[in-house]
Image (tube, rainbow, N blue to C red; front, side):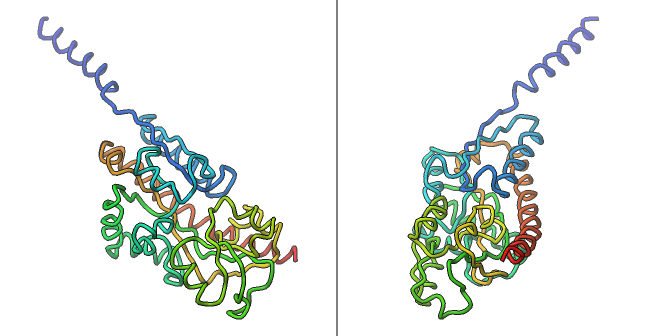
Length: 287
């Protein structure tokens, strides 16, 4: 009887102590996308996936529309502990190391997201990129690639001659230098400032995102010309976390986040391929 009572006590203790030992964590992330943006909605699904698969063990507090710091400052905010993770893009960090261009946007380097993913996961890209991120105290989790971008413009862009003197919003890095060489006048500004800059005439166009995303941003309510299919740029967004925070998670927690992000990456690529084609048809029909 004593042995039976002892075994029963052990079962009760194990049952009570198991859940209590689970490490609950809340990760603070920032994205430059708004909640109503298509990618913003997919990020909400990512959050739900993480919380569901972890049975509530992992919570994510997402700050949309760069509401804590400017988009380009998100990476530093994660390094310094203001945030835990950065869900913007590596191309914003070329000032730290020019090699970030290769994890952000190689101008004309890829035709499809699948080529870029092949390099990341099967061509040694992930390990090479991880060295770059780790040197900054960050951990790269993965990419999100929505396909070729489309330029938006107040005038037609049919060839290189049309770029002469064209003032447009450009992200920092290689693109700015290339378009300057082609005679354009790129202006580096935050993603969240594009709409107002177009509306007030500070710029004549923008390199913001893919065609469907540009429609979602309302850019074609202001300007009426676009390049489609895209030809110049296919950037990747990333999920990168403070390395100490990441290392402090359990292996299962890290695996859950990684798996959920790969699902998001797949959804972003496929949904944007369809959405861009639909946006092009609608814009053409609307004149």
